[in-house]
Length: 132
Image 1 (cartoon, rainbow, N blue to C red):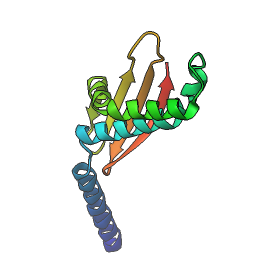
Image 2 (cartoon, one colour):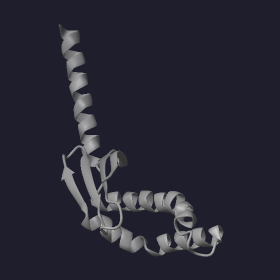
Image 3 (cartoon, rainbow, N blue to C red):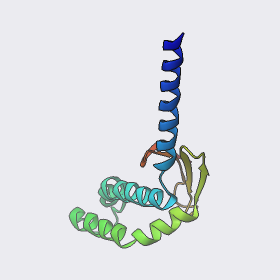
Image 4 (cartoon, rainbow, N blue to C red):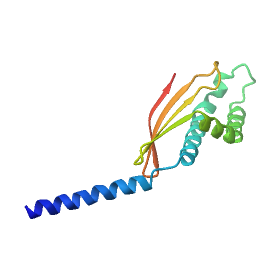
């Protein structure tokens, strides 16, 4: 019986320690915005900019030039991207972790996107990304 109480006490202290460490390492909204900007700009540079020459086939064909210009525009627009993410993100704080929901819908001519990300232990995990 004494062994069971000891194991229970150690397990309880472990859970309290885990909860405290989760609460202390719950990332901030600012950190999420930095993460989201980084992920979005990487996606734009690696996926969208590489497709730009195919989508803009009415322009003179120089794919390398178009890709460079696209990547340059993405880098130049980082502050605006961060502002858009900040304005379109809702945050639910659960003390141990935080859920961020971002809805990007910039223009009726462009597709809209919905992202859900959990922040825990100073890391982010995007568990839902849908084109709407």
